[in-house]
Length: 263
Length: 262
Image 1 (cartoon, chains in turn orange, purple):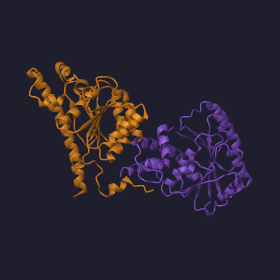
Image 2 (cartoon, chains in turn orange, red; image 1 turned 45 degrees about the vertical axis):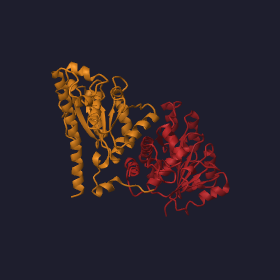
Image 3 (cartoon, helix red, strand yellow; image 1 turned 120 degrees about the vertical axis):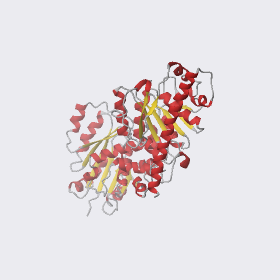
Image 4 (cartoon, chains in turn cyan, purple; image 1 turned 135 degrees about the horizontal axis):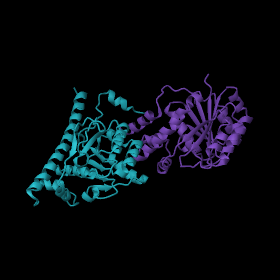
């Protein structure tokens, strides 16, 4: 039985970073997580999915939440509910994560499933396998002042040193917390990801399961007062611009890698 | 001349995971390129042979011709290690037979290395087996194996009781086989492949397969822990076998998983 060494591919100068969507037809795998509840995980997961809708790109969403409102309430057509309690549930989920390469994926990891998800991921090596198959996993960690969050962030850094881990600040939860210190971004994707504050009225509107950020962005007006309409459009613009930046940084990383192996 | 090594894997009770432990040992030795042959004493059909057909022969260890097949060829065989997977219930009688043919004496005289992997059951009766077995093992390497693969509870043993038995045999070394998901284990059984083949996403004969990555991941993680136990007790040193590389369990098994992705 021959045993190939991963080191052999590195010695040949082949870049082990995953190729871009356009080149390789593979999408990234976003893992939205926090060990704490109501920090904005589902909102971020929704926004990511809607970013892809807005650009007519395929996305598959996975919902590990067990208390509502859940991602599957907002995006029922593209969201699969996941249970990790059984081996069959784990196989149905994790095997699919690395089996489908061509669409981007976003996983909303509830605070209750945080530990289970990452213990299993670490045990079976799923994120490393994703990389080997050309899928780039990116962990988006919702930061907050609780020291449990800082502890969890540190564990993820230790367990998954090769995986991009980006701290995300939801301004309604973590305003004023610096990124450095407890939540350093040591990944090649240097984007300071923030979810801006929303006023109460706008927050109520976007919390409706029928509301779609992508559809709103495409529509001239839905009859909102100008002030609220401007606020919401500004919010979407700001968040989607950050997502574009993430995609650009990913592309730059791939281009740098490509040129280094093809001088 | 290199001393032949004989590894006996046995238990006086069925269903404790004896053949599973034999399989992990064969994978461990194969990964280190140590030539090994195996004898499966589940005559006539065999159980170990399903998983390692190329290196395993099914024998009736109670018959003299088959005993000659095993022990008269120790020095002439190209295998550095001979593993014998002893059928449940006949470990004591097999050891008795080995004593009668002078095999244990040969071990005592340093003509060969003899190691026994005694797979323990969860009842107190198993602990009594240790006392009976140890009589045969004055110069042998004695490994006491607690197999948790199917979530066995060794609850009948309180620590004091266990210590009172275990500590009597100062040269006995304890090995723990951790639990493995039942579904993952069953899938490997169905495929009838070595654990390393399953991890590398291959079938029984080494052909490409399409096993669940999740199950492969669990088997890899489990086997890493088993091999780490073998590394911890310096198994290769104990049986006097040398390998070229000193690579640890995890990197070695990760390469199998990585190879499957290419």
